Image (cartoon, rainbow, N blue to C red; front, side, top):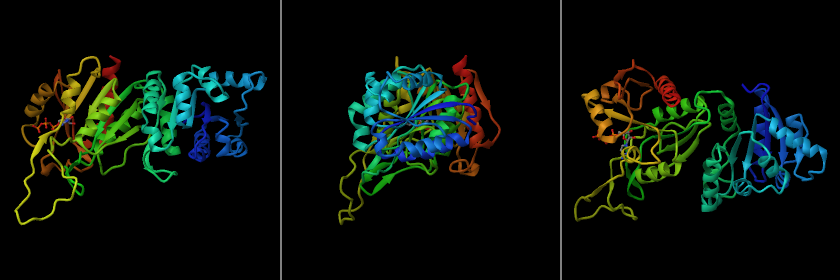
Length: 398
Ligand code: CTP
């Protein structure tokens, strides 16, 4: 709940601005007071009247007149707000924020405040992946700005990819996490999850049976404790949780690159079932049946992401947690794996078919650390995740 929380909502000029209307409603349903500010461009997409009507407060237009006492008062208000939400955060607004420009009301409010800021980016996919935007993103993250989204999907401009603004309820979850006094508030955490797909040709790939359920549950549990979570996920069966930054990938190499881009973090949780091998030279054309016999697939080794990150110097997260899926001698194999990979903890589980764990809703894990092996009773994957998240919070606090 957000009762009596004061949110200053800066609405940027993008087609996703229409979602900010629903966002205002959702925030108010939960008890928050919302003061909206529209940039000049936002006024082209939503009307100040609809924004004000939903917020039950005057919507401030970006008419930038700091001699106007009302605008000065508004700057005070930005300081007294509990959180500033920028939704949609356009490429232009992110650029201004990263550069420290203050040439209109929205950017001035952002510069003149020490209130935490949460951005929900929304832009064309090429604008999102543009090096300038990615540079700005890194800078803003380093400045302590939090992000929710963008999501991947069909875009209003007809393209497909990352750049869609998170849905209002996802933003609300991120707002709640940001305002929660949870033990992981202010911490950045990375979670890898799901299987990877290693292409054979454009239509075939090698995969594994991971559903991504445990990784998604861990990401959700960490976000619920207030962490800013980057969720790097292969093509999983279960949807990613709300309120985390989702980075979808397909192959182990892409996952490895996405992990590097997410660093530095306070903790890295590597729950993905990464393919150990890829096809050395995947064909760019569909392989055809031929009279010459069966195709021979040659394999190459994939990067071991967990091992690589565990062995990093300055960028090594203070806490690195791996998972070990074993079918026999679980403790012995997982203990050896912890040493081989160089991580701090290993969450080991028995995935032999009789357990029904792989793809199922329950898990029975053994946490292996410097202190030896700690066996947890069989429980739901959500419960395992919450227990693990609580342990991570304790470790980072200690
Ligand atoms: N992992 C990784 N990158 C890889 C392979 C695995 O980051 N290329 C991570 C997984 O996310 C998991 C841990 O390493 O946290 C254990 O993975 P697993 O495949 O079980 O370990 P292996 O080293 O492949 O051991 P083995 O196949 O011998 O059981």
